[in-house]
Length: 527
Image (cartoon, rainbow, N blue to C red):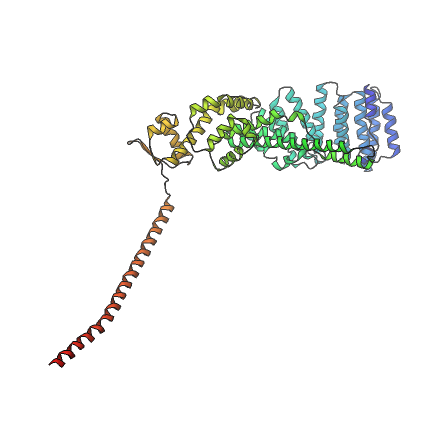
């Protein structure tokens, strides 16, 4: 059975567009026909002699063909030590041609790895091929694939750290010969192994090698889900709730888009089936086939209605866990406006409470929404690679949610009160006086979210925005300018009154002189 399979894997003269002369093909075929355990040494010597002659003549096609034949002969006999030794020897020969090394490595991967008698022989062959490929850019793709294979083997053995270290040595983002999908999958595997090794810093660095626009293609749907799931775990370790929310929102949007693609394809297929008839030409059938291949594939295993709903629930709870800020506020209102969120009932109500400027009672939230949060958060934790590393040592959802509710209530109080007693504030926050004072101090001093001043002797809190020095100086300069304007206007009005008074006095003097003269003339006439 093995010999039959080896006959099928015999090097082809037309493989990869390499045209080999008929004499070389015939000679190699005759040697492979008579190869056995007893004759392997002699057959290899003849093949090596043929390889040397073709290599010196710089015949790339014939040299590659013969190197592949050496691999076939060793695999056919089952001599794995001879295979490893001859692969290394051929790769180190003087002026060895690149095409020959590529063809030999590919033949060893296609034949030797599939028919290795045990795992030890397979591992030895993989390590040999990785050694041959090391430092050779023209076999970087093969080296990456071999590295992935050996890493999977070490992981299956429980040697996760060793597997992660081997994968980290490969910088596949610079490989031009690797396809986009395979490259992305390789990097995601590197991130996963780093998380299993609990190396979150390196995982965060590696995951940044993948650009989100690379995952926007329709054929990257499954990788896009993996990417955001791994990124969510990294952000959970960093306790960045808003970024976790964005990860699950991206997963939800990806599922929605994939469902739309699947529905569109289904409708197109139904329409084509209705329009089909016995008179359909071969040309039209070919075009239909071409259209089918252009539509992205849909994997039902990666999507279902329950999974999409679960992603949306995670969006809601982590949005509620996120600290208040411009981006969080914008995302909060955008999510609240989604039609699907309204179907979540209780979780939709908690988001609505965060968007209204009203006091939220923790006792009410704990009573009504505890089960929803526990269930959704439990599902999130079950999908983590390192559950204890993230959840136990980082945060508990009850504490996080209560902090967000307290912060929301403090913002509401600062809006409706300019001055408030400490005991009354503690009562509204469902906290003790000391705890309420600590939370308020954290909002004022640490997060710079509120402007308030506590007067402990009086037991009051004043919510007043403190002016910075520049603002106070600007206000003073503006006030001085206003005073000078008022003085100028006043002087103008005073001068205006003086001028008017003088004008009125000058007009009155001639009139009084004429009256005096008239009275004098009258007296003279009477006399």
